[in-house]
Length: 394
Image (cartoon, rainbow, N blue to C red):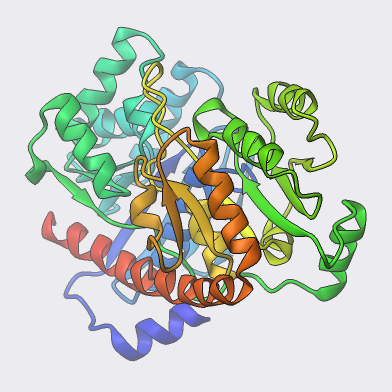
């Protein structure tokens, strides 16, 4: 309802109302930053009086079917595994929605590549593609795949980065003109989901977190470039049994992290919660959020922005990040949290201890964090910018 009230009260009607179809392989219940981005963008786009209708075509790891999230937002789900299956599905949906005004793929490959190829060059539609960081900068994959990604950015009606950092890396890597690339930040809701005290108490009891404990929270995929090993080293070096670290999420590095914690004598201080259906309660019970990502140059793996940083700050949790990728755009250094250099466990430990010993500073940072993300990552601004861009190519 917040979206409808805003648009009805404050936004001027455009001359032409838009029909938009989003193409994605990542959409809830699939977890991850791109999934949440696609859901937020499509949801708020459907609130605009400048938009008649929004369809989302989600083609991977989805239970087949259709559902209306509201009267203007249709979610179409399918589970297509192969490139060929996705190709034919996009052909079908591009034909079905050929009278729509805008095609928008929320990641580069394969959806962006196929949406541009089919939508722009067969159906003559403006096709927009959002890129996030690793999806375009990673070095893994064949030469053909990397060529397809670059081709997509060059041939999309407009390629959109989620951060200035990501856009600048693309300009440097591929030599694409800045005028071909836009930056539009993540559309964050005004307030986070509410968390009941009973749920918070249940989680505290389950993981034996006492009122005297200081909980450092990590939320994300357990992969090398997100820097979990440096957090474990920091916690082990602090040697304070009231300062604990919790990993929420799973991934290929979990066993390595567990082994590292054990070898450093920090088994009792490091908690692995695994995948959870709802991370809200974990933000609610934490004292500090940290995901000290670094640019994993061997694979081109980089943090495009860091949506988990935004989510944590919504709950008034100060954050501890690194000068890496888009993280400096997601944190107000010295005000909503701190930034340290990449792969520096000693600096992480120093900031953790400082915030543990200074609850007043921690509280002020948390209050500033809520204001910071509400102002900078406002869903109204993001949606307006997308719609203005769409209209400029009609």
